[in-house]
Length: 217
View (cartoon, rainbow, N blue to C red):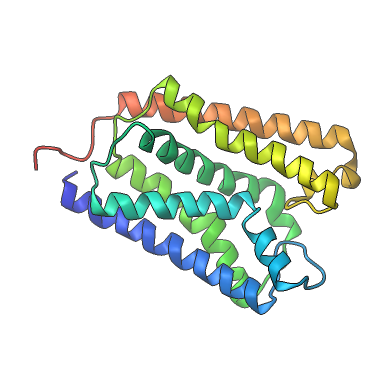
């Protein structure tokens, strides 16, 4: 994989992720559906809730890192590595959790359906495939994994605390009023295990797959 080809692949990821985020932002501003909202809250509250979704945060990380890799497909750095790894694993979790837990709850159509499929299906698949093809790698160490874990842990704690205080949770499986505290604990443990498995898998692949792109181009 040459650097020029890698750059084109990263550009594709950046464009799809950015388009999905802009479309979802337009829909939220216009008052369209956001997950299972049954009424339209004020604009400021809608925007605050939008950025609270793990889906949105993971897509933002993918878009930001993909745009930077478009500029420099060999990008590296002390703090770049955990951010890039967090984006890759985070967007994978977004796709898997949506497919297993959230997809059956959603009944969307039109532009809402399109935004949902782009954020939860197109971007995760494209991001993972492009990472496998274009890297960059090697970039992962166990230290990188530990640093990348900070974001999902902080997000989970913050979401549960804010939800307990406000009564609003971005995802129903985190709401103890739905099926009880036990169900929330099970969901959190299950997602944590998923994160750890994906981080371990990414680390193993990063070490075993051949380095890309070709720095000698």
